[in-house]
Image (cartoon, rainbow, N blue to C red):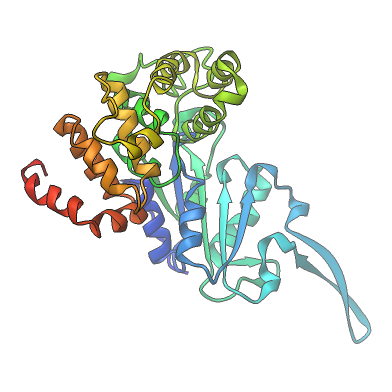
Length: 357
């Protein structure tokens, strides 16, 4: 199997593309900060390879006995011991397998040695993955200080790439197509530095982000924690404000949860979606910047063919910058893009305001 070794910085999308393009021939390990979404790449690749079996392996929990169990075969007068691979690796299915080795840097040294054979030869004991199977892995940066280590001989046999943390715009592009609460998306839009990286020297004092040099660090803002914050925000009515803030503090940190609380207050004062659709010309348009931002991201999530014309009538009453935000954001959602492009009013607006883009 061909191997390369290089150290460029790539995005999560580029990581997934690299695995999908050359992963059959080159084992790619993506290293990056905690919580940036490395593990979510499995969902992306699963959609690209629907005919593959999926094997997700959490390397932090692996022991040597988890790879295979011994059995005996009789050959003439002699008994020999062989090893049957664990079913979790899907070698028994007869189908091509997409294997993700998550947190490989945290595996025990003895386990890493077995994993190296799997990565380079697609083999466990005497058993091989089917041809064209893909094995890739994820780990944290050594500088993160969370116990990740790939030995030199392993690093020299794989393509070890550094996956950078998504910035606010990249995360928003993902969020609008993945059912994230509009108020959480709007918060990131207004607080883009919450997704900065500690590797940027100018962000050393940023209270929102992971920083291994900061003592007593608790919960921080990451793509992963924001997704959890969205799930909490959606249940705010059931949880109540006090419990919601407590849960958010334990998910994205106290600074971020306090700031996000003000967005919840705005949400409670917004016109309902039903009111906007029923009376787009008469329903009050908010003056507050945060309110307009939340409304736009809410519309991207909720607008359908039957409600699009009414929403377009309403949004034209809001400042042009927010109209532009709706258009640029909705065009990054594959489902909503098709819906909007098929609408004549939407196309006419784009033509009339093409200078904005």
